[in-house]
Image 1: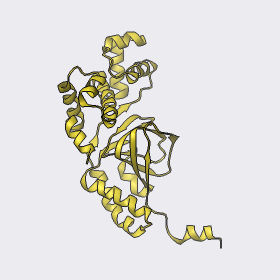
Image 2: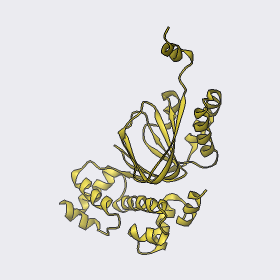
Image 3: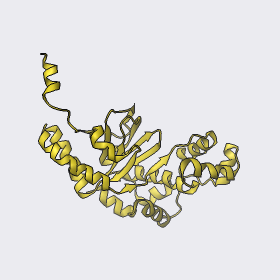
Image 4: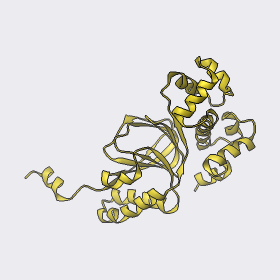
Length: 257
């Protein structure tokens, strides 16, 4: 019997495997997919993950669930430390078939880091013991709405691209509608039907994505607010807190932990 066949038959496949890798600012991992589902954890830095479902912003101390077979690409906004867990089908079925950004605080964060270390040291027994608790914590993790859904209608896609290129634009819905050759009522209906959110809320998510990238790069909050299209820090802070549940100052403190 060959060595490779002995190796394959000696032990069952690991239900969870792991990878730790650091990436420089601007690095991009091209479109790819995996047979296993992934928990992609941003130990530091901000990732922008693009799938057929849209753009997902993954800031520090957050993780993204990517189901098995989901094609995705990752762009690093600043220097990013990625810690990834790959879950087999049996382990990941309860996590669903759509991408989700999950808060990785306390026990969950320590579990993910410990599993990366255990896999690196080939400590299979420890991995098997931690897996049920990991899955329990993932199922109970708070989901965060840091998602920019992608449209299919060409008029809506053109309008969204205009805002994605420059989130600080102050175009009204009427102005966007005129730009794409549709009525404002039609465009508003497309935002609701295709993206499941209003134009105002979609723009907030786009601006939040720009803000997270700028904050990760070390820009002061006043400049971040201005670059995101907000006339005042208080208006920016209110939006930030409404979506993320923490003020920009509090978020910056979390990043430094």
